[in-house]
Image 1 (cartoon, rainbow, N blue to C red):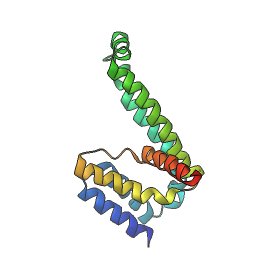
Image 2: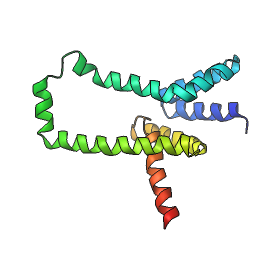
Image 3: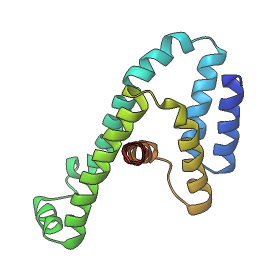
Length: 152
């Protein structure tokens, strides 16, 4: 199937599922392809996009610390509460899973599962009110699951 058709299908699903970030990303990829810049920009985005995106995401998350809305006292309080400790443990686990997922998709070459990951994320956004930021964690879980199944 032509890659443009696949992108258009993902775009339609994203629009239907109200997954705006997926729809915008898909539109950008389609536009770059249609105007012929894909051969120049796709390799850069494929190589560095994940890293740049993570940097922007982490910077956005750290804005409350940078602008002073989170104080050292707030930090001390959160690390002595059960929710803070749970957040620390879950963050550790999901960061590990994200790393496994990135390795699974890129180094191990299983990027072919990406359409299923995107459609699952969009469906969760549409029907469960989720935000489609989980494909790396999902692929990490998938990597561990496939490793477990293959070693059984």
